[in-house]
Length: 56
Ligand code: SF4
Image: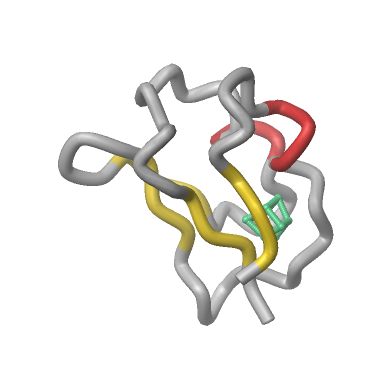
């Protein structure tokens, strides 16, 4: 399981520093989560102002 970032992402970058395993990076137009690196801890979800991060 991994979290995913939807198109609600406004590329604010708030989530990136919250991830303990460095799974979040800026992508093309929105941030993306590396599903192989994500340990599904949920730390990033509350950091997102638009609610774009959810469980897959
Ligand atoms: Fe990183 Fe945890 Fe968010 Fe996965 S759920 S991207 S491990 S902060």
